[in-house]
Image (cartoon, rainbow over all chains, first blue to last red; front, side, top):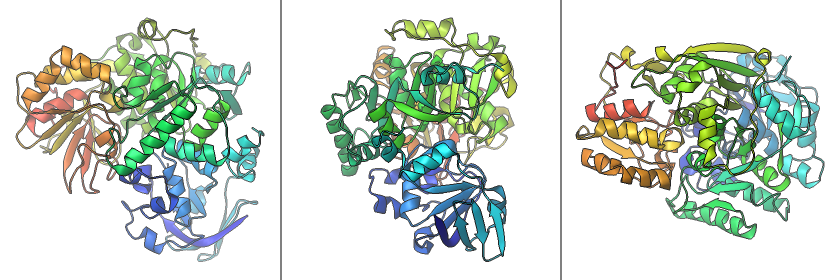
Length: 163
Length: 420
């Protein structure tokens, strides 16, 4: 599995209220959620984002509410992977459970700038920055989590009775 | 090396004699919770994957509290989805308008959570029930759906920070000041992926309401859960509410990564400035006059009877400042009734406040008190993120009910400065 796209860069403590403000939580429609994604910190995000792009942030990405609408909105907006120095734990679970790829990589989060061209090889955990001609090694997932992702998300894995 | 309280509960629910930090386990659940925002997503996933039944209709709770009483047509549709799911699977603990309250005030009150239990909820403040000595944590909607279907959930066993409490709180200081003080000290990711475990001789001076407030905001330090040692106060609280056997776990002191000593007597009324709960100042450190437009007293953090009592004692016989809108929200129907019985509602209305039916409403910018451009609010809620209560330029200052009530009277951020 690979991803290849432009980076959208944010800072520390990007919370789920700015990823998808609660005023839009009266729906669970993915497209509608995506149309408001990041609107409170980056008004132009939905105009700029292209299918296959990468979101990059610093510490504690996705802190705050448990709303699964947050990773759903990011995924439905076209983002293929979020890279951060660290993730808030509920966001981390939710992303895995819905099949949004996330990588913890301090170096990548430090070095990648907005709009850099990024390619990710998930099997190897290697993030390549084509704009800067650099590559970074991310933490691979534990096998248990790889299994959930390989089976197509948490619910599919439970429906199959493999949990 | 021994185990923390959290690790002992997780081990027992995973059928293991021992667990270690970092270990991935599958644990049996005693309760799965959802609300009107997160349950519809869970129900959609539950149906999409073809599950035909729930693991136990007595161990699922659904509370219509966030956008209920329905704030608009879409919110009404979401509650309808939950209602019909609850009927389809005869979910015993489904709470709709008339019975509902704010979930994290309601469940302990109804005796649905108890010491030693393993609980997940599709709401980040599910960590509240750690006040009763339970392992309780917030998850997303997929986890909720999986939990409803299977009765179990995967966890990575957390390590823990121990908060050793000493002495007792001064007058005018409450649980909210304790947790804001701690978050100010360790930061919004200070306990990331970890448990926050509370104990020590100072525990005896903290009421259940104080403990519920403290455990409630463990998530604001990034923690997986907050949990208190069980003592006579916890047992007395559960006595009239919980009618099933429960288990008390005590920690092994060598199991902690870090131990932080907290001198309760040194904690001052504390305010978290925009836009993070870690941006704290004590009331004595605020030298400027920060004028405000709105005050909200309520939420799963501070909508309990002792919070109402603190506010009523301060507001009694007084008038709130002319240009300040004061919204008071008792968290459950029984708290609401108790406020009526004790005359608090008269006090609030006579002081110029409004009193709302239980709802999460303004805390997450849903309805019932949305802020306009550049407006400032003092709130007893738990988050002051950008745009959380309305316009992205509005500001939220998180405080205790005492500071909120004093500020309502003053028209600017004010508190029980002289009291020690």
